[in-house]
Amino acid sequence: MTASVIGLSGSPKSASRSRALLELALAALERQGAGPSRLIDLARLPADALLGRREDREVADALQGVLDAGIVVVSTPIYRATYSGLLKVFFDLLPQDALARKVAIPIATGGGSAHLLAVDHGLRPLLASVGALVVSTGVYGTDAQFRAAVPDADLVERIERAALEAAFTTNIHTGSHRSSPSSTPEARRTGGCTPSITGSIRAAVLSTIWCSIG
Ligand SMILES: Cc1cc2nc3c(=O)[nH]c(=O)nc-3n(C[C@H](O)[C@H](O)[C@H](O)COP(=O)(O)O)c2cc1C
Image 1 (cartoon, rainbow, N blue to C red):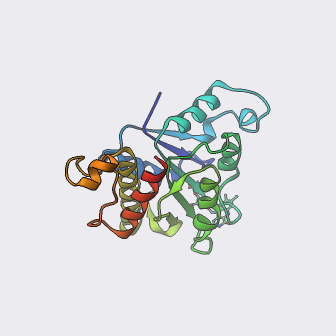
Image 2 (cartoon, rainbow, N blue to C red; image 1 turned 135 degrees about the vertical axis):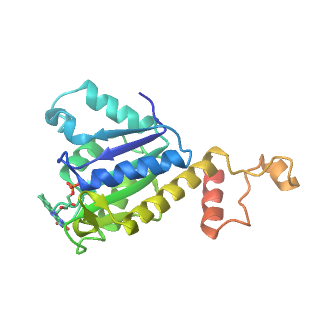
């Protein structure tokens, strides 16, 4: 199955807080018009194949799903101050630059706030190591921010913001936010690939990056 958005859940648990945030992110992206999404529970994949001891159709399909997607959302519990080993073994199977020209959203939950920076010091470099452009808003939730498995409003708002950034960045890349080719001489010359001076500085910078590598 090909999906524009793929979500990878790195929690070994079936009732998972980080997975709950992942589901919210995928729903937010669909509302933003990012296209159909698919969620992969890495814990359901065969462990020996994840460890590279044998080939497996399900694992190959999950890896292909990542390669086919435009947006990759990754969620993980914090284990020993960083992302889960389950997420790591899956990423070890990805080809180099597997996430090049893709936008990624990092999501993590931890027992407390002590390992909040694991999103920036662990998850973000993991995604960047395979070429992803990671949105500036990372999502980190503590267990105390959940009531009966439902995240609080601050967490939901952060997910919405990350989803908006991912959808916007992807739109710049695919051209949905390009100015009309006939609107300005510069736009006609560049095929509409000109950074907007009315948008945020970050949007203009992102637009410039995408246009220069597109
Ligand atoms: C083996 C293990 C190690 C953990 N290590 C940490 C840790 O270093 N820092 C932290 O904040 N929470 C730690 N936790 C707590 C989990 O990260 C936290 O409960 C998280 O929300 C679980 O996410 P999940 O429900 O998606 O599995 C650990 C939990 C387990 C089981």
